[in-house]
Length: 201
Length: 201
Image (tube, rainbow over all chains, first blue to last red; front, side, top):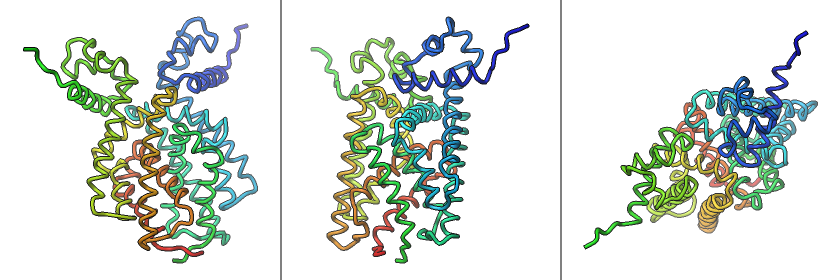
């Protein structure tokens, strides 16, 4: 009887090893051979069976991170709505904790390569679009339930929040002292407080 | 009589060629040999005389971009103060124009490598710190001259603005259609309008 190999399980194990290498030394300092070795494969050929090149591997790594982030968002927002749900969503995206800090490193590596790879850009765009839609849903709930409204232009606010969260991936990496986890949370909270307290100027 | 070579002029020419290659194909797809060839050097040895490795070259490229951005900011803010000067400053940083879009590509490449290189992070941190200080100066002028105050916590507003601008480097690259130059300007303008119109809620 032939040995059954769980293809998707192996892919996932490779991706998790890749995350570790990216976090430790950066994607450009990890060759496919290094990654194969860290996965316990004697030759890079086995790895190539799953991922033909680094961009494919980075794409799959980024997709899995988005998927897991969205799973965590779903879990964190159960029974919550409006601005309360929106805060929970943001806290799963910003690099204020150890886990999200590793995810941010993968994201920055991914973005660098996305600059010259349309397929990667497409996936990055989908992730932004998905989060933008979730933010809009939370804002609509907040408005319907009288949390807010606080913002005359929810779409613009969603863009501001999304750009701030992406920016935190950069600033917290460059200056973790100034942009600590608590500072990041304070920044997001202040943006939500601003629309929670109606400004009628 | 020996031929005089302007060292700093050569360095600058190499950096400008590097910008072009980064913008066209990405730093990871340009070897030191490719860069040497594009600079008109027959062998990479000459290039190595100026920049021993890619990180040094990328560091110098990023530093020159920051320097030029700051020169443009100085020129654009002559005779302007407060929120008017702040808008001019932001427009030199966000990737809403062709020039700043190329600069943003170099920045994203730089950030990716800064993740695993403390010297690069240090330079990136200095740039953020310089811009943060300039933003604070504009906010203090705005407050002193009654433009605002509009924000009870200028430091937090400066962080929000800075993170939004860094985030735009990512979102405009991933989704240039949605995050067009005019949309980017609208986003920044709305943030400044918010503190120009005093909110006393």
